[in-house]
Image (cartoon, rainbow, N blue to C red; front, side, top):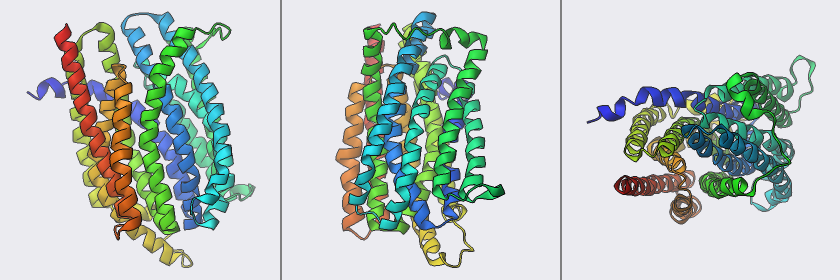
Length: 456
């Protein structure tokens, strides 16, 4: 029985692993920032957490919107229509560029909000200059996403990975030089981390475009754009797919951002502990994101071929693979929950020893909850990818809103701020929201695919 699913594991992983490594690359930028900034103190780590909480919301809208390009390119590729594939990239790139600049300006307008969020004053003071620089990096990042989603739509997932690896090398090098003032460079603290992120994302964008331009298979797609000719129907199609997809990602990222803000109300140490647990959870989530792309691409191709029986089998093989991998991650979190947080802090820092010890204890408690939501988080994102491949986005958007904001957030708010659970209570709410999302989205996929098969 299981063989019809397990025989797909090899191809699913082949398609997904470059995406996973590429997505991990984005997360590793934050991981490197957190570890290096964590050496400066818990206030600096909390400031990066607060600044990135705004950036993550903007990123979720940009990255979520760009995912509309992948199923359109995959469907065009399945149908053998290169002109439609190029059109999807061109119009998607225009929209992503406009969205990147819009989100940058919105982030600048959000700076005064930090003073009214009940956050520690020393954290806010450090976070504002960090936010100003990282906000501008949204422009190259979302433009990069347009090219990335296009490449993945053609089942070519390795090239974005190469660009992301280069970005990480640049980011870590600049972090080392500018955070600590190494080799005669100025010591800029967390502003140095922001400069590293900004520079690495511009380099990532231009390197990726150059890489695609050099490849014969891609040259037709990524050169000779006629931006004077914009078709309303293509724009409308991308917006119809992209806007709900952006909202889906926004609803999930926003509840994790709310967890950062709620933790900030509890104090700088709970906020720093939350950042550590969130950063570790983000890394395992990227495996789900990679498999989500594999599901989206493979479902999109089968949709183009109108083979719905095969579509359902292939999608379920990705779900099953995700389930098995997430069990492994849950076990790792359970076994390593006391050790992982020690990576982020300087245990020999006598001045901050009491703060660092408290952060490690709190982070270990959060990782205990995170171990359990690995499975829900992985399943929900992969099923969402399969639904995007089917170009079903409106009802899943409603499902994600209900799961995170009608079920998850009220539990986080009440348990976090009005009971002795505090930080752990915030994460119990996250677990509830992710589990509800996974269950409801799978029911939606099951219903849709059975209906499509019956129609044939």
